[in-house]
Image (cartoon, rainbow, N blue to C red; front, side, top):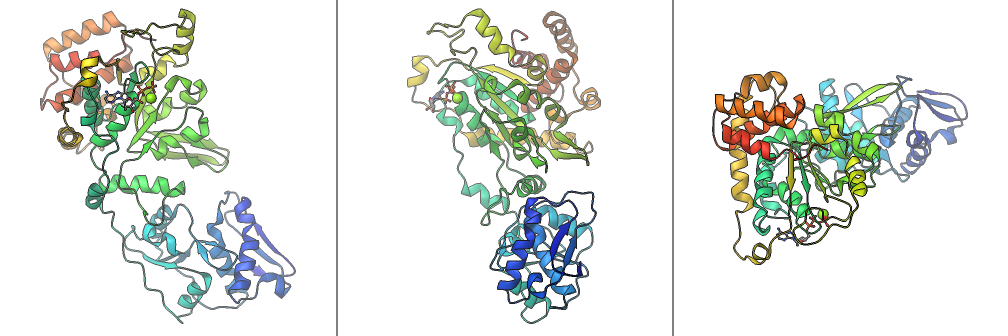
Length: 488
Ligand SMILES: Nc1ncnc2c1ncn2[C@@H]1O[C@H](COP(=O)(O)OP(=O)(O)OP(=O)(O)O)[C@@H](O)[C@H]1O
Ligand SMILES: [Mg+2]
């Protein structure tokens, strides 16, 4: 930045928020007692390098203001190894910005000693160890600190306290409250154990939405590494709150069926993570599945396979993590009562075909567990005795996950769903009877290779829940039940 004549301009592909920075910075400087560029009648050019990368958001306000104060000799400090980020309000106060956790991680990796952020972001930044975090309320506070007039104490390292979070939040829906639907509950347990995707199909009011919510209550708690991964994504999306600077619960996202492709998978001129990334390490619930636009749903194919999503832009591509457990729910037909035991379906065959066509074969092929959720019989509905609680099931899920963690300790994966073909060869051994069963199933039901691999993974999870080293015929037989009866 060099003092010049008359003006204040920002170059280096700024977005609107960055361009408007000059107004905020000028006003904040004035209200902090400094002399802004307009008063000094000089031209100031702020060059955000490298020039070919787009700059986004208001986080540059603070460094621009400090840079200006330095070159106009209104302050004196050594900027070496110090990184500044923050939005300035017109009165000189610092406002929180998004993405602070990622900024702090990057700052540490690049050898910065101190990171200055708005006070409201300090706890989030302080999740990163080995870098000093100074959280300031306003520009004057930062200047006084830098000029050694009034020091701000570094923010203490924050801990993601996962054990206290456990006590804090009761699950929204406990499994014990769901009557009947034993098969669907069993599927929830398998899905939670091996991280497999589910699609529920059934008439209105049979409990599909309820079951999806209950899944959140049986998933194991996030571990520290996972919590940081998820927090980073939420931080970039600007969704963290000041009083909860990190996520300790697995996310549960349920975008509406009118959601656009960008909202679902991410993107935009300045790419932002979409719902599938916000659901990273948690649940993505797509209720009324066929109501989503087909093009939007097709976007899920790559992330479902690769657990990441890549957004291509002229300047290069960007990859967000998207390792989510998808739960989709649908009615079997537009009126909802196809194959129902009591109500008659009023849809014509053509309508049913059209409804099902909205879901492409390749997409359904990527869903591991297909399950029908029928209407409850009166006896089940009125039954007062409660089934297992979420806590009991969660313990079994945790055990099955431990088996997987120790099996995959040198493979860099955590759950059965993530197995590659190489892992499947190594860990999904069928005994002779099971092998025969698989052979006849594949030839009679016309499974694709992908389905074949999926079946092996699900069988592996069922065997893990049964504490069995090998996949036995009963494990495969159960996995086969969860394939759709008719390939759509
Ligand atoms: N198995 C069940 N046990 C206890 N309550 C249930 C059960 N099934 C449904 N209910 C009750 O019915 C309500 C509706 O259930 P839910 O919203 O899960 O149905 P749905 O299958 O998602 O229906 P729709 O297809 O219309 O979305 C729930 O809020 C719950 O109170
Ligand atoms: Mg529903």
